[in-house]
Length: 534
Image: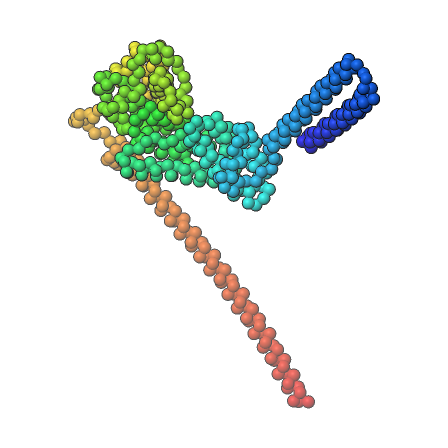
């Protein structure tokens, strides 16, 4: 189709060129006619010098009309030329914008980045798809190593898109599909790349904690990497070489990163959502998740009500960041509507107004209520569910100012509290094991059963049965020994008879041989005597 379109375009260009040449020829003919008319007019003026003034005026008018027609024709030709040039430029731009059908795998990240720079997301997806198809491992020997490098380049490119001032989250969402395809083709290389990123992030976190004693939440790129881990690898395994380190890293984020700004709360809630996504199938208990949600409720309370319960690190019972999610403006409370908290707001929170910041705080609190509800539904089968959720229940029932919140927020609050209170206890209290009471010793006659006439066997029934089995075993053993002896005697007799038969046969054969030898010797001696006589 492209070749046909190219031919069609070429034919159109040739037709346009022919039209332009014809127009130029017509313009030249018109100019020649006008020049001949001017020459004839000048000759008439020289010959007829005595013409009237009216004839001169008519000649001037005809010259002006001819000049006007000439200018109009030139203007039309210029317009046609400009239109043709614009058409050619548009066709050239379209030809330049068309993507080639074959791409080589970039050898470095700079070439990969330049290949995708200035392209739309659809074009980027087409380029990545064509790179995979043109360099499939079945086509050449070294294609596997090249595509393994491509996974690392694409992962780094996604991280760079996330670190921009305005992160391109939609582009990242579209790029996850080619990343998933490469991970399915090369799972070992993909796991090595992501483990390398997680290892570096964990080392950086430990170094910051050793130097400063506290750490901050990572950037948006690391949070997106943690989300990508849940999309590429199974999170329900008991142990996984990629998911387990990511699990440990997220637990460190919720326990060691201090909550100083509203951005930290948003990042922490995002990690909580990732935790619920990770354990949705395995239902693994995550204590850091419950503690962080308890801390989020703690920083939404006024200082005079933040007493009577305990919070764990990174939250503190006192401090300047205690009322981080507290909203006191009644107008902002009335105008608030429940919205999803976008992850991109982390980078542009400084540019927002005070009303938008208050709305974001309320949205974070509503998200916290929703996460508490999901945790209650997830961990309801645990025997210690009520003890785990007891601090959260106390905070919700005794400290949270529900009446100050909007109606929609109150609905979220009541749904979370109802989910906690409606769970039935799945365990029973410890009770001593029931035993039969020991009877008192009494002077009652001891009855012994007589098993054989004339013999009294002392002991219980089990002991008597045991003695019977021993006696039976002895009898059976004696009988077996007797039978074995008889069998041995019979075998000995049979062996002796066989030996005697063999000996008698051997003696008989020896006698026969000796007799035949004696007769032969007698005959030989008789023949010898006859010879001597003769």
